[in-house]
Amino acid sequence: MADTIRRLVWFGIVATAAFFAIFVVLGNFATARAGNGGAVAIHDMITSGTHRLNGILVLPLACDELSVEVKEVSSNLYQLDFQTWQDPSISCPRTPTPRPFQTVAFAPSLGTTFIAALDGQGFPITIVPDFSTSTRP
Image (cartoon, rainbow, N blue to C red; front, side, top):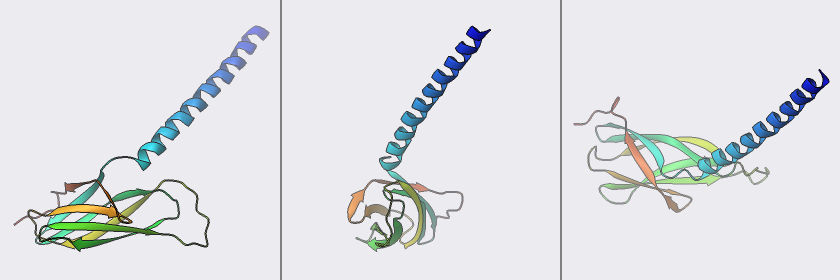
């Protein structure tokens, strides 16, 4: 009987250690993917001459705030200019944090291209048209 209990205790210790190791490895993998996930998907609800853009950016610091402005580069090229800022009086942990955004661009319904920059650094985006609410002429 004592031998069975000893085996169960060792099994519990080994299983707990294995689950903890898996948790740590997968947690680090998820954090790495959140900070380096490739192109950011931006949803575009198009109405006549208006693009309602929204999505989520993962920012490197937990206390980063986010703003977005649309700048016309040419007649069919528009830049989404994202800016971050922080309150300097607060210490900020280095934790990747998702921040939602939304903006409106007054641009032609067809043939419009969007590019993006975060604090002056370009990054890849993918525009995902939302056909459920879009109305094209």
